[in-house]
Image 1 (cartoon, rainbow, N blue to C red):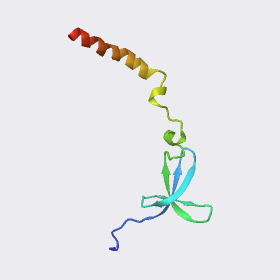
Image 2 (image 1 turned 90 degrees about the horizontal axis):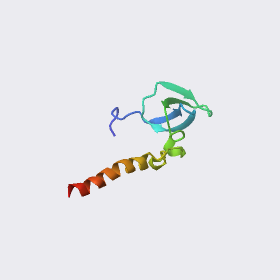
Image 3 (image 1 turned 180 degrees about the vertical axis):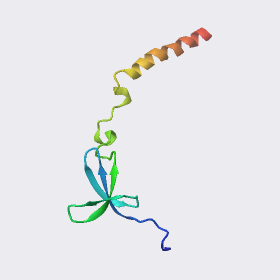
Image 4 (image 1 turned 180 degrees about the horizontal axis):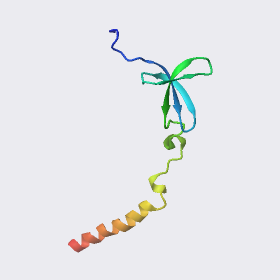
Length: 91
């Protein structure tokens, strides 16, 4: 491998700002802040708006399209009949 052309791949602490969940993984992301971990290591800190701990898809709080208070059914009732009614009139 050539020297000086590869990014700085190191351990980084990611912090979810919505619930203060922290996890450490290897990354080459640019971080401006440092954090002192419980074990004494000083790692670069990268702040996230959401992670798997707070995202609705992973926490099971995401709403399905079918559970939106009958909106899909109302749409089908309103526009499904107009296309079916237009077909016999065209013949």
